[in-house]
Length: 88
Image (cartoon, rainbow, N blue to C red; front, side):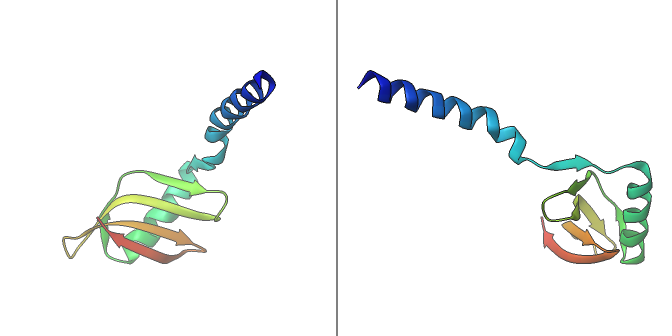
């Protein structure tokens, strides 16, 4: 019974330590920020906050992009095109 409890504790610890590895986003480079900014401006966005690259989904994720229509959106960009936008 003690072996099972020790194993369960080890598994819980391993899961906790592995969790940060699942977050596979990285900050955009300066060149990527410029490129994403061009796409956003061409589509009517006037300002935005954080830009990250999601390695798993191979897309850029833009937080709180303000559109000329007054709306604020989270925007996903892949291949120089907006593939998703979600109103905040």
